[in-house]
Length: 81
Ligand SMILES: N[C@@H](CCC(=O)N[C@@H](CS)C(=O)NCC(=O)O)C(=O)O
Image 1 (tube, helix red, strand yellow):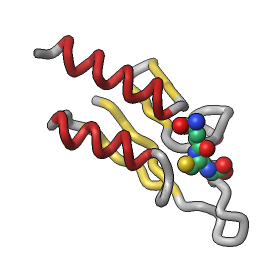
Image 2 (tube, protein in one colour):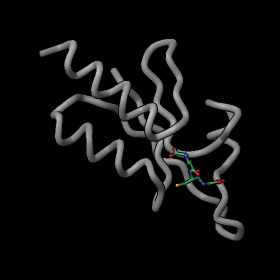
Image 3 (cartoon, protein in one colour):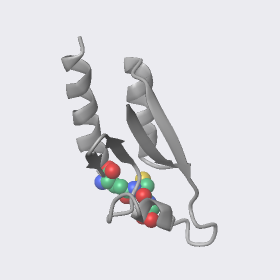
Image 4 (cartoon, protein in one colour):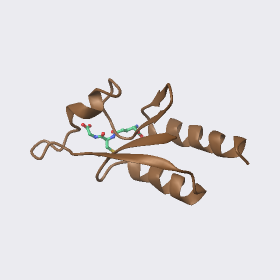
């Protein structure tokens, strides 16, 4: 199952929106921005060195770029139709 690593007020909303529209199951993990700098926390860096949201994990696949994540999800969705 796809896991979406999410930051509030970030591009990860577009990934969540797409998964909801497609009715695909997914797990959501919320990460909190640093309250002073508003930057992403170290918890994101542990998943991908770019440490930007969104990050998507599906098995061994880890993608950190919303456009690439959207393309991956659309390919997965068409494979299962
Ligand atoms: N081009 C990347 C941009 C990723 C990005 O800049 N994410 C921002 C939120 S929209 C972020 O993680 N900001 C926190 C930080 O830079 O520490 C994408 O579309 O996924």
